[in-house]
Structures are given as C-alpha cells and as structure tokens.
Image (tube, each protein chain N blue to C red):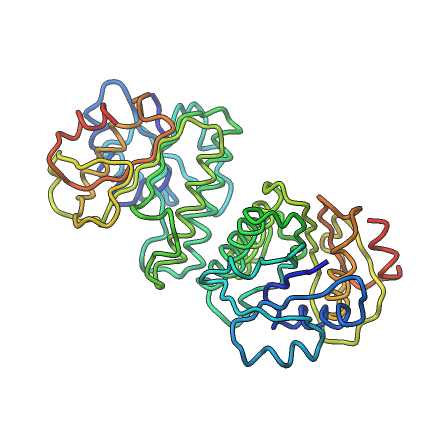
Amino acid sequence: MRVLIVGANGKVARHSLRHFKDSDKHEAVAMIRKEEQASELKELGAAETVIADLEGDISHAFNGIDAVIFAAGSGPHTGADKTVLIDLWGAIKTIDEAKKQGVNRFVMISAINVDDPEEAPEKMRHYVVAKKLADDHLKASGLDYTIVRPGPLTNDDPTGQLLIEEKIGHRNGEITRGDVGHVVFETVDKENTHHKVFEILNGEALLEEAIQHV
Amino acid sequence: MRVLIVGANGKVARHSLRHFKDSDKHEAVAMIRKEEQASELKELGAAETVIADLEGDISHAFNGIDAVIFAAGSGPHTGADKTVLIDLWGAIKTIDEAKKQGVNRFVMISAINVDDPEEAPEKMRHYVVAKKLADDHLKASGLDYTIVRPGPLTNDDPTGQLLIEEKIGHRNGEITRGDVGHVVFETVDKENTHHKVFEILNGEALLEEAIQHV
C-alpha cells in the first residue's frame, strides 16, 4: 500500500514513518507544507514527500495513493480558529478528497473521550467538538475507516504494549507517541479494524497482537 | 404555532418578536439564559420565556413547541472557541433535540456565502466553517428546514423590501436586522420554504410576497 500521511511533520506521524521504513509491504508518502521538511522525513522513513497545505488545495497529494492516515492537528499552542481550520475543516476536506478520488481506506488519529463535548472541561470543549465532528464526518463518509483515539500522550520510549478498548473512558493512563505511531501503521492494512473506533493507552497486551483482535 | 426562539436576546431575534406580538396565529417562546432578560422580551412580544443555556441542558425548552427559529450566535467579540460552542455545537444540539422531540419545523439564521470556507477571508474562515457545518447538519437532519442567509447586517430602520435568491453571492448590498427578523417570522409557517436555502439583502420586492414565491 502507498499511504498518504497528512500532517507528516507532527510527532506521532514521525514515529509512524520508522515503521514504514522497515516495511516491505507499505510505503509512506509524507504530506508536508514546506520543502525544507522533506529530507528529514525521508531519512525517518518516507518513501516520498508531497507539498500540500491543508488550508489550500490538496487534491494532487492523492495521486497513486491507496490509504490515508490523518495525523494533522493544529497543536495546543494555536488559537481555536486553527483548531477549526485544521482539526475539523482540514479533516473534512481530506475525507471528502479521499472519497472523490476513490481512496477508500482512511485511518484517523482522534483523541480519547471526544464523544460527548458536554462532559469535557470547558477549556477543551471546542477541541472536543472539532474532533468529534471530524470523526462523525468520517463515519458517515462510506469510507473504510478506523478511528484511533489515544489517551494523554507522552514522549517516553515506545513500549509495544497496549490497552485497547472501544471505550476506555476516564481510567488513568497515558500512551507514548511512538506507540500511537506504531498503532496507526499496524492498523492501516488490517481489515478487522474497518468501521471501528477504539481508544488506546499503554497496557499489558502486545501491540501487534492487540490490533489483530480488535 | 408555538415557536421557540433560540438566542432570543439577540438583535435579530428581538426584531422578530415584534411580529409575533402582532400575530394572532403564532406565539413566540423566547429561550434566554438569564431571568432578568424575561420582562423586556415579553414587552417586545414574547408570549413566554424559558431559561436554558445552549452550553447546558436545553431539552425542557421544547415542551409544547411546534417550530424552532435558531437565532443564536456568539457574536463578533468572543473568541473562536465560543463560535464553535454556540454557532456550531449549539446549533447541532438544538437540531438534534428538535428531532428527538418531534419538532419538525426548523428555521436557521445562517449567513451569506458560507458554502465555501476556502473563499472566505482568512479572519472569517473559522466562522464560515462553523456556519456551513451547522447548516449541513440541519440539511441532513430530516427536519422541515429553511436556511435563511442574510448579507451584511445594519441597524437601519426595516424597509419591508427584499432581494431574495438561492445564491446572491458577492453582489454589493446589506440588510437591516429588522428585515431579517421579519423574514424569519414570515418564513416559519410557509411550506413553500421547506427544504430551501436562500440568501437575502434589502431590495425591490415586497418582503411578504417575496417569501411566498421562494
């Protein structure tokens, strides 16, 4: 599979690239905004890069693509306007473009506990609305989606071990960005994950096995 | 008809109340956040008021209601987070609650040119995304909707005269808040406006006739 990684310059996406580098089945096309990001991402494991901005035209990025991993996010340091434009509208644009171009496989990196904005802390609520509505759009798209919802992220070394459930809820835990990158790589070609939403934390199960039994 | 006006304390909604006051067919239930707004809105024309906050539980507000006019908006002086929570999430909540409670008639006050966020000025784009997605949710809801999209609003005296088209686009013009309030009042019981989206500016046609021929 040739997999388009949207938001490839982000931390989780960078971790996923290492797995593509080691794979003889799949290759990653890293969608980036700036040419100067290209060499580093190729070194990490991107087979190719494509320059496209989620706030502009992205249609050329889907050429020859079999699957999409949506890893973009405006991050915690921008305003709510960027959350709307990247996390929500950028996701909707990507989903619609995938559908238009017949790219049926779509893995979304979402977040834990975004089903109910009302129960989110007030400061987070607009972010939760954005993530929920992006996920809802994907579910209604007809694409073969998987929605991966990690809990609180850390930069610790990847553990290769998961707790994975449809709804983990508010139990304590966290997950390394490296493990999230690994999960989306493992998920992209697994048909048993189609049309599923699952939450993940680091846990007891072996990551690769856990994905196979979702 | 008993019509729930969501965001009844806003300027456009206040103008619509005058028309309910003069009507012997319809009465307005003004949904407000604070008890102290009640007496003024009753004076303007609300038959009743109900206290409910779009950021909390609104289910009790639909009791005995036949139609909804959604006139809420966070306004130009709040952050994009409130645009998400009121204009988008508040609208979705209201639409879903109307559907749940069998209130099939829904008039949305939207805005001109919100079909394509990409063509909006950058500063407005998050607002356009919010309005567009709220409208999209309403269109997909199965309710008997009408989406009214006024151009730039003024506080001038109402004219009673309209330009009304499915797509006015970027032609110059503006419309008084009083006329928008009048349009939504006229629209609420007109079956010819069901499942329609129209843009409005002040123009040449008599307002009441123009609504009948949409």
